Image (cartoon, rainbow, N blue to C red):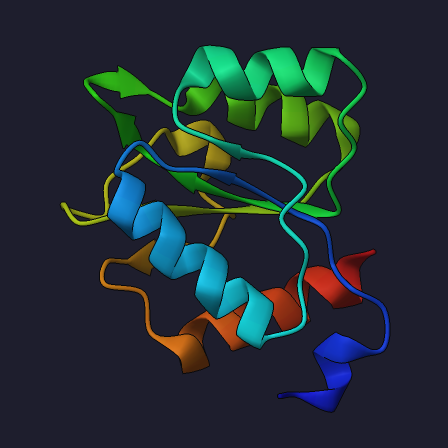
Length: 124
């Protein structure tokens, strides 16, 4: 475990529509000392959690959720100043409005995830 990430658990919203992939990412986040207050499998589920008062420190957003782009969730997070990264198994193109967001290809490597989470922690 990385000492820089475990002092205070980072609360990471996970938006991922593939159940097994979500479990794997949740395990990686736990290994890095993070909490997952919400693991949403759709844009609607993530939006509902955020609108109901969900307050993540950061988020990991699958770009394509069963054919629906995750960008409405990214818009809410950006408006709240919550850092986020996109995840995908496809090409790295995404909405240019969010070009500063880190991009994590799947399968997600633990070292790359740790690097992104350290950057998120530094922006809080």
